[in-house]
Structures are given as structure tokens and as C-alpha cells.
Length: 619
Image: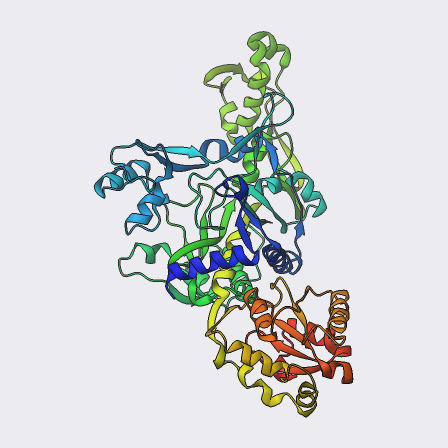
């Protein structure tokens, strides 16, 4: 099956079976907005729960839920208003707007055009005679501009309070740091997680769930003291990872390399212990949720694409349809975010670090004579006083002469030293205020859902599984009871004969903890009380906490096929033996192995199967 065929088949399956589909189709649809159907919504929820389990509960972090709309000053401080842009080029013929870097990537051998300067992108478009994807018009000579991706709105009536839909969930954590540090009792390190929607006005949304205008993120902001806090690197140092470093990307013959997390950190391939730690943790989690590790790598950001705040950044990438898709970013953000909000906001974005023992230090102070500064400098007097205080902290030698000069917004002011109240005093300090650094693993939930679906979609030959020969284990009682009824076949025999009607079986091999439905319950036939008994068993499983489907339409084999296609890991068949001895047949999606299980033990068996503590073949 070709890459395009696999992608098309996934898109068709997703729409037909209720995983995801474009929104507002009754009104022509809107690019970049998708609806999760009944199967997809549950899959997404299960994936988020799995993320929460690994990155919040097991790491001992806290979780919050912040608003989607935030006031403009937040994004002034964060830099989003000035630097959250993509490259846009407009077709002179049809007027369609496109991501210029995407046009370059789709039509040349360049893989990461986003990191290339606009002037060079314009040259590449001209040199390669690239055209408008919509109408084929030559784009050579057309200007490439920056386009800010923020969705703007107004908070309240009128336009006096502009706001924006958040382009990432992270700012909702950073802004609330002064209160969140209280919940952490002022002790570093601590982590704050958030799962929620983010919004970016993408120029050209594409590839289903890969590039959306409204999307879900699962982000963790881990606040650490850069001088004292270290990760538990030993717990992941032996984890094997596939790393595509910047050096490898720049090498003509470069390719990703396999090494352990410990080796990568020790050799400096990964520059941050904390980033290395989370790469190791995430590697195991990706395996847990069903990412095909043969189609997976960690790629380091090149210098041209590295965010201004990041000292080191790696993307987890999955191969889908021949393309490498970013599904997670791992960044060491330093103290950029908290420092910027500390400059703009009226609150304290630092943590008080207690010394083991108090220390005595010399501290330069000023107490300006405002009775002099006021008449002398008028409205600038307070700013001059602040400038004197700042100068004393950084350069006390400036006060050694009779006069001292300070700069306020480009203007110089000279003050007699005797009017500054300058003094050097000995003070005893119990600690100091430090600005925490931030380690950020940021997961794209929608892209993860898409990746898991793409990597789990398989086809196999129906006749090659154990289902075709399963009647050999059916037992005399089942064969006897089946011969007494209209079917003339055991459920396993009926499944096998029905499977022979089709050459291929479509299966989503989703991990049981992610599957939208854990178990499906079928009556062999919807008569003689079998349907009622199946309903009772299904309700019993629901009360035990499982997602349960019921289906009495068509042959058992066809019902198995329908559940295989939506990823249901286990199916239970209620037959005439169930009415006699209280047992049912349970069948495994991936191996098609079957076993008889007492109804009274069924919930426990399903729980053990889901947890990976046993297999159907071992029952």
C-alpha cells in the first residue's frame, strides 16, 4: 500500500467510522477546524488520560485549566505580538494566500524551509519557477511577508480592551506563576501541566489533523533552579533513542543515530540534562500509546529555527505518508518567560532561595533627597530616583565623585552625590530571589491522535489468522449445541466462514488503554433469549467501568470486522452454551485467538487483558 493510499484510507475510515471529519460541512466546511466523532472523541480523551498519567501524576506535578482568551499585555510581554509569524505569499492571479515555506518544501528537496530568511525564500521561489498551488500562476517576484497567526478579539463591549485567543497553553501557566508558586510552597522544582485548546490563524491548513486553526495541546512547564536542581537522569540513561542532531542534518551524508540518553547527554549531543530526561521519559510513553518506533525520531532544531528563548530544542517526529510530522517539542526555555512577565506585570515572578546559613554582605543603597530632586527635575524626579537605585546596585564606583549622572529614556540627569543618600552598609541575608528556568515538553494532541491512527492502521489476510482454525478448540458442548440450532455452526466456525467472504481484514491495532471501546458484546443470534443475555452482560461490563459496544446485526464474522476496524481489542460472543453453563467466548483483535470464560469472571479477565497482565491465548 503506497503512502498516499494509506493516508487516503485513513481519512476515509476516520470519516466513515466517526473518528474525525471537517466541521460545518453543511455550510461548505471551514479549513483548519475538525470535529471529533464518537470514536475519535473517546480516543482523544483516552490519549490525554495516558499523558496525564505519565507526565502529571507519575512525575508529581500539578495541573491547571486557564482561559482561552487573554488580554493583549500578556502577549506583549511574551513576544507573540511582534514575533509570532509565518511566511505568506499571495497569488497575483487568483488571490489565494499560501505558506511560502510550505511551497518550497513541497516542490524542492529543502525540508525545513521555515528556518530560512524571507529574502532567501523569495530567491528559491524564483530560481525554481515555483507556482501557485491553486491556479498554477508563476510566483517569481511576488513578495513574501510575515503574517501574525494570532486570533484577535475584544474583551467586553467596544474595542478598548483588546484580547487574543491563546496561541499556546503555556502563557496561561506563566502568567499565574506568582500564585502557583504558593501552591508549591515556594519550593523548586515543581511542574505545572495543562491540556486544552490553542488557536492559530494558519495561512494554509492541511493534512487533516496535522495543521489546524484550533487544536489541543498537552503542555508541561517544569520550573527548576538552574544552579541546584537536577533531573533523575539515571532512571532513563539506558533508554535507546533515535537522534537527528543539527550536525547530522548539516552533513550531506548525515542520518539519525541510535544512542542511549546517557550517552547523548554525556557527549553533548543533547545540551540539557533536563531535556535529555524528558526525551527518555517520552520515548517509553510513545511506545505505550502505539507510535511505530521504526517511523519515529527526535530531531534537533537548527540554529535558524531555534526560538529566541530556547537554549536547546528537540522535536519528536513521526513519519506519516512519507512526511516527517512534529508531534512534540522539548525546549529548555531558560528564564525568558518569567523575566519578561516580571518586567511587564505588577507581581513577583521569582522564588526565594533560602541559604543554608545566613550571610553578611555589603549592600549599596540610595535614599534620594526628594526635596531636591522634585524641584530640580519635576515630573522626572521619581524616574531619576529609580535610576540612581539601579546604578548603585550595579556600579557603586559611580558614586565616588562629587556628582553622578544617570540616563532616563535617553536623557541624562546629573545629581550631587550628597543628595542621593548613597551609602554602603553591611546587611545579613537569609537568602536571595532567583528567577526559575523552565523546561517545556509540549505535545500536540491532535497530531498524536493522527499518528496513532496512522501507525495502527493495518490490513491482513483473513484466512491467515487463528480465527479460521479456531473451531478446533470449540469443544464438544459448543458443537453439540450449535448443531441443535438454525445456524448449524459454532460462533468460531461462523466467524471463519464469514471472514472468508473478504480477502482483507482492516484493523486498528490501538493499545487497549487508548481504544474507544474496550469490549464488544454479541449474541450469536438475536433470539431464544441470547440478545437479552448479551444485553445483561454488556451492562455488567459497563458497571465495571469499561466502554462497551453491542451489535446483533449480521454474521459474527462481520461484527468482528466492524470492531476490528475501530480498534476494539476484545469481543465477547454470547451463545447457547452461555445459557447452559454460564460461559462466553472472548476473542482477541490482534491474534484472533479465542477462549471460553465464565461470565462471573469476565470483568476481571477483561481488566487483566487491558492491563497487559495476561493474553487471550493464555486463558
